[in-house]
Length: 156
Image (tube, rainbow, N blue to C red; front, side):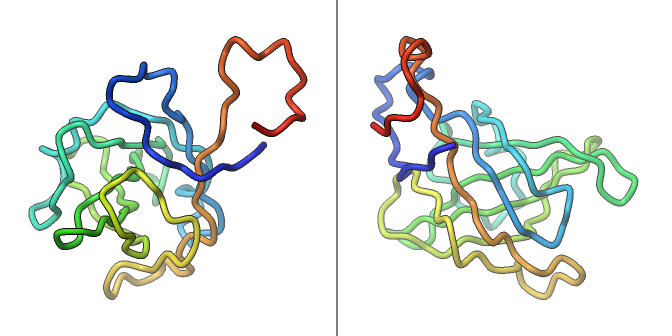
């Protein structure tokens, strides 16, 4: 699997051009580790107040899991952090609720692009029992469909 810088493609591109999966590794909430799948947003009505979403087409990644004997969805999404910065959050949502609870925060990055910081994530506030934060968060590069018949060993 190759990882590449995760720059957001223009909105005119087809969904197939977007990177559809993100991997989260090394966080203290074991079920939150693993592969997150791209979802068209609709998260704007689901975040607790206080999070400023960049826009309604937010790139959201989700992973369903069982945590504390409950079915939950872990959600990875960007928010604005001031006028020129963005930050990603990893939150959890109970299956029967629209309310999300933030577990981890990425460092803030300059610009409002879809770049997900890979390292230096932190635990949200004083949350207990969820240390350590993710050790690595990265988009998984998928070769364009038309190149499946070519060798996958060449980097682009």
